[in-house]
Image 1 (cartoon, helix red, strand yellow):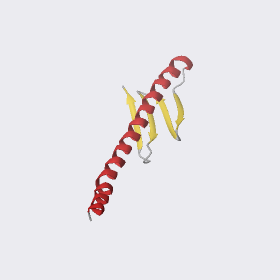
Image 2: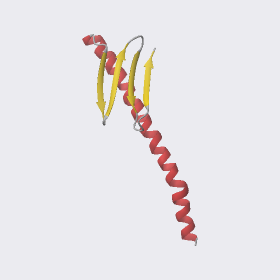
Image 3: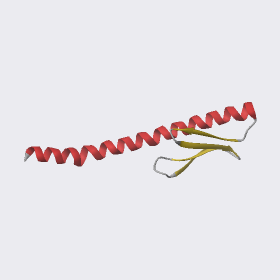
Image 4: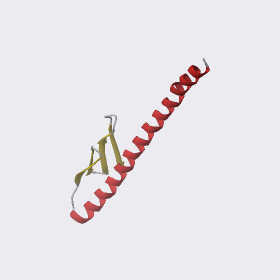
Length: 87
C-alpha cells in the first residue's frame, strides 16, 4: 500500500512539475534565440543595408524585419505566434 502511494505521489506531483519546468525552459531558449536573431538582424542592417531576413534554428523560423521598430516573429514550439520588438 505504501509503495502504491509513493507511485501516485511520484506521478501525481513530480512529473507535472518536471513537465512545467521543461516547458518554461523551452520557451526561454526560443526567446533567447529570438534576441540573438534581433542582434544578427541589426548587424545585417548595418553591413548589407537589408531590412528583413530569416533565420532557422532547431526547426523554428525566426523572421526579422525593420519597419518602424526592429521586430522578430516566430511560432513557438506550441504553435503560438510570438513577436519581440525593440523600440
